[in-house]
Every structure is written in C-alpha cells, then in structure tokens.
Amino acid sequence: MFREEARWLADMIYSLQPNSVFPMLNIGSSNQKFRESEQPWIDELLFKPARQKGYSVIHTDMKYDLGVDLVGDLCDPVFLQKLSEIKIKSVLCSNLLEHVTNREEICQIISSIIPNSGYVFVTVPYQYPYHRDPIDTMFRPNIEELSNLFPDFKVVNGEIVAGGYLVQSTTTAPVIYLLAMFIRLILPVYQPLQWFDSLRYALWLFRNIFVSCVLLEKVEK
Image (cartoon, rainbow, N blue to C red):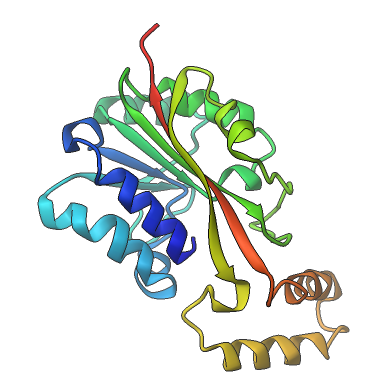
C-alpha cells in the first residue's frame, strides 16, 4: 500500500459514522511487521487512530503470524461462519484482487458478509508493474470496472490516486534501493525467473504509479 493510497482510505474511513464502519474486517492484512515497520504509514494512518478511539479492526489472512487476528480462507464455509459471529460493519480489501484467480467469487463473498448500509473499501493497482504475491493476474481496473464487481453496492467515492514514483514507495532510502536493484540485475543466473520479474520492476522505478480506490455502500434491496 502506498502513502497516498493509505491517506485516501483514512480520509474515507474517518469521514463516516464510526458505528457504520466498525468492527471492520481487514482482508489479506499481512502481519504486524508489514503494517508497522515495512510500510508504517499503513498503521499510522489507518489503524492507530481506530485503536486510540477503541474501534475494533480485525486483521485476517491465510497464514499464521504476529498481528493476524483470524486465519482462514474466505471460500471456507467454516471460516465464514466465524466471520458472521463478529457482526462486522465494513471490509477493507486492499491490493488483494489482482492476486486471486477467483476475484468475482471473492467479491460476492465480501458482499455477503456486509450488512445493508455497511461499507467496503477497495483498492487495486491501476498503473503498476507485474508483481508476484504469489501470482499477479494483471487486473488493473478503472473505477467503473472495480465498482461493477460489487453490484449490490452504490459508489460513495472513487478516485484513481497518484502514488508518486515507485522508487519512493518504500521506507528504504532510494540510493540503497537502487543499489540493491543494480546488484540483482547483474546476476541473471541467480533465480532467472525472479530476475525477469526484477527487470520488469526496475523499468518502473521512475514511473508514476496509480491506484484505483473506491468506497462503496451496500444498498437495501
């Protein structure tokens, strides 16, 4: 997640009535180290304010790790039953949909666990290089394409957010980042498949990146 993306999400989340947002489910949350150290703006902007105000955020992922509150697969009925007991009001789905081959199914499941008048906050890269995690389907939707995945929702806000240069998107100093990338590129014989990924990534280092961001509200039928 990029700084401007996190800032946009924070503006949306905290502009709404808290009782219509929390408890919030953060899907594909990764671990505490990622949110607080590798990309510290995620916790600083999105989750720290909620903790300070006593609002509940449940971090869920498919792997056990520090900072993951619930471990499970959204496609598992047993796990979905657990989620139903939490009575969540909203879902944060950030930079996940480009990494799954069943995104329509995932979006249907997300829609099913949000109550009427609840919200989903969704972000997906719009202009960004190929990146495995462990796959990248190259899903790069505009606002309309992203919103159409949630037919039971209305668009409250949507924006393609500029994230700056890719080389500036981490806490690593640009000089060190570039040096590490250079060393990787002069060693193509080491993990050649990953080397091609690094090459494609390197070609984006000084290009502007953009993210599609939407805030959607579930409407009562």
